Length: 150
Image 1 (cartoon, rainbow, N blue to C red):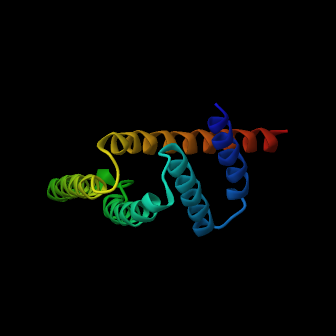
Image 2 (cartoon, rainbow, N blue to C red):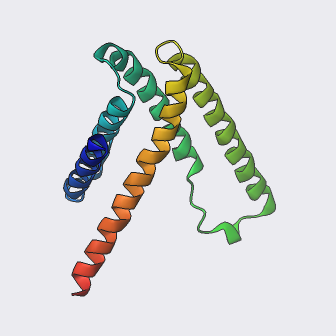
């Protein structure tokens, strides 16, 4: 329970600071929070963390590059023809396929340093971390909206 309270406190206080930073500083703070959260929840030793983070960071970078490919301007979807729509669908499928390959490679590489159980826990922790970030972002946005309406 203490661990959970500490994590929420760190996330809350970091999110307050994040609102005042540039985008690159925000990402660096989020990354630092993620490192602390995963390391604590998975009880990494220094030796395991030293092997884990280069592998995980390589995965995150590859995934980020994939998502940049996938996030194109869909505002004008009404203006594209069927051939262009088919090209977009093929690109979406290619990105999904590539993401599967990257995740499969991550799991294979991680099996050499952590247990299968910890890999499954990591998968769950990724979702939890993203949900907490989204929740904090929304509550911060609501607080900001309430302040401006007063």
